[in-house]
Image (cartoon, rainbow, N blue to C red; front, side, top):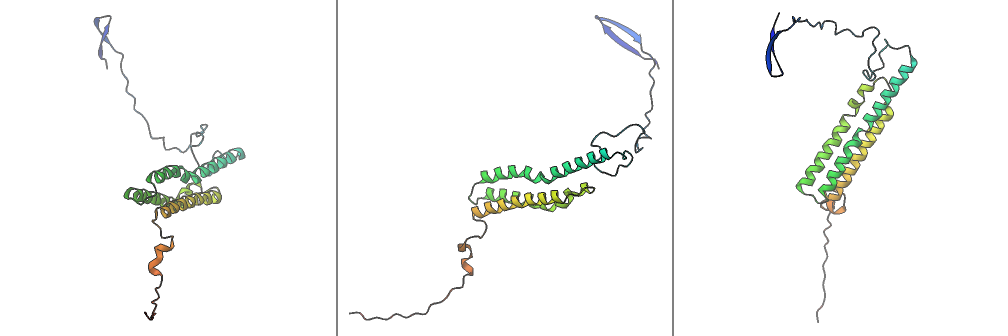
Length: 184
């Protein structure tokens, strides 16, 4: 294919032929190959320990295991990242039970309960290492967040924690008494 292109250089117009353009067809059929010989995967590409093709080196296994443990600890302390925002929102809502402060309290409660329900899913990707300690730390941080939320709700008067909240359940005793006296 010969094409002509108009070149404008130094204000003069000239027509010059281009070289023949060769179109290549891209071949994507061999992209599903698991691993090319001699080419290693980049660091952090796989987070599982089941890669036995590059195994044989205990050093790489311990490095992968250390990386997995580091990532598991990062997942374990992830609830604390949201606590800062929740604490600021609770502080800004104040201690009076208004509509916005109750809505913020509800938002914080649902986010903490969501974190509790996602505890097993969070550590599912780290099946190859023991994540019991990280799992317990994750639940402890969620529990501390829930305890502070309940403390704040109690301070707002939304939880029945004082004796005046239960006054309807105190049995009343009807006193039958007669008083008599003499007036002079």
